[in-house]
Amino acid sequence: MHAIGDGVCAICGERLFSPYAVAGAPGEPRCGLCRRVEPPFARAAAYGSYESGLRELIHLLKYGGVRPAANVLGRMLAEAIATLEPEFPADSLVVIPVPLHRTKLRQRGFNQAELIARAAMKIRPRGDRLRLCGGVLERKRDTVSQIGLTSHQRRENLRGAFGVSQPELVKGREVLVVDDVYTTGATVSECARVLRRAGATKVWVATVARTLKISAQHAEIGPGREDSQMDGRSGAEPVPLAKAVGI
Image 1 (tube, one colour):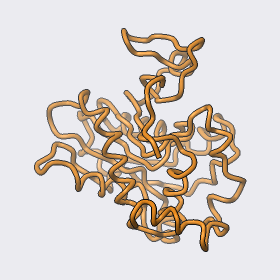
Image 2 (spheres, rainbow, N blue to C red):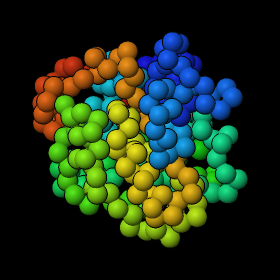
Image 3 (cartoon, helix red, strand yellow):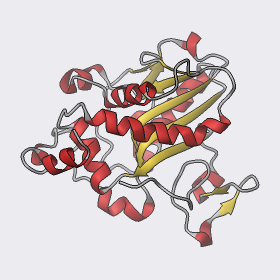
Image 4 (spheres, helix red, strand yellow):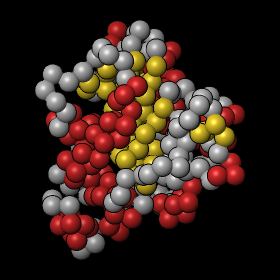
């Protein structure tokens, strides 16, 4: 589980291939999509590629219910946040986990994004300017699985799915949205749009993992696997990974 290196879009973090890398601001290469359409967030950063051991570790938490995995993932999220930190404002910044719908929350028993964020905040310095606020965003309706949907279908699926329950915490301020995985960016983009409509001046995004172009074929999960509690991952397979990360 290695951190993503250089050679990615300065805005969304997508992997760049030199023939298509186009500079935005000086020293800021952008992918074709971010050059054509300005994202609703200022910048997104991820720790690693959503594949192999990192993907399994995230599944261990989300579908296996192995909560100590959040501590390992929290350290990774903290590293992703650190890459954005030089651009953060001098005053405090509200950290907002991507919420689950109440139905999914009851089924799973926890919001993995919030667990990972809490673990990341614990290793931050005392008196840190980052403040975790778990109830700012709410998921107003339960959306269908995003797996297998086109980019347009993903956007339509998430349209109107989020709302801001505490706008006073974001109005006139910059905020940081955190999640476990950035796949196409549809989820964090919708969150960013809603937060900006509520008055946030700028939205940053940090995730543990990101699906990169070269690894997309390996990170794809078959239809229905995300919502079936990953039954095929029970048993002996997660044990070696759990031992490897010390949980």
